[in-house]
Image (cartoon, rainbow, N blue to C red):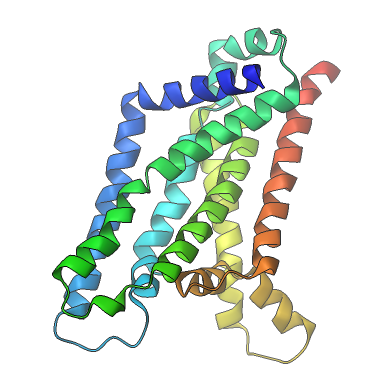
Length: 250
C-alpha cells in the first residue's frame, strides 16, 4: 500500500507543481462559470421546464470540458515518462505493474475531480440569491457528481491507455480525444435513428452518455449505468496494464 500511495502522490505532485495543471483548472472553471452565467440568464424572470442541474450540466460547455480536459490531464502519464527516459527507471523499482497503472489512474482521477470542486459552491449561490429556495435539489446535485465521477473515471482510464501507446504527449492527447469523442457520438444515435421497439433501441439507450447524464442530473442513479461505466473503466485499465507489461516481450 505504501508504494501505491507514494506513486499517487508523485502523480498529483506532477500536476500541481506544473503550470499546465493550474491552466487546466482555470480553463475548466472558466467554461463552467460561463455555463453558470448562461443558466442564470435563462432563469431570470422566466419559467424553466427542466431541473437546474440538468440545464447546467447537460449542455455543450459541460461536454466540452468532459471531452477536452481528460486528454490533457492524462497525456503525460506515460508518454512524458517514456520520452524523458524515467519510465524504465520507474519500472525497475520494487513496484508491480498493476500498482503503477492504478496509481497513475488514481492520481489523474483525483486531479480531475479536484478541478470540479468549486462547483459545490454553485448550489449555495443559487439558494442564496434565488427567491425560490426549493429549485436546487441536493439529491440531484449528489447524483450529478456521481455521474461526473463515473464519466471522469472512464475518460481517465481511456486517456491512460492512449498515453501508454506512445512517447509523444500530443499524439496521446489526440488519440484520447478521438476515442472519447467516438464514445460520446454514440449517444447521438438515439436521436438520429428512428425510435423502434426492440433490443436495438434498448442498447442505444444503454450506451447513451447524454441519457445517462440526464438521469444523474435528476438524482436518478441506475445501477446498470454504474456497472456500465465501471466495466468500461476496468477494460481500459486492463488494456493499459497489458501495454505496460508488453515491454517485457520486446
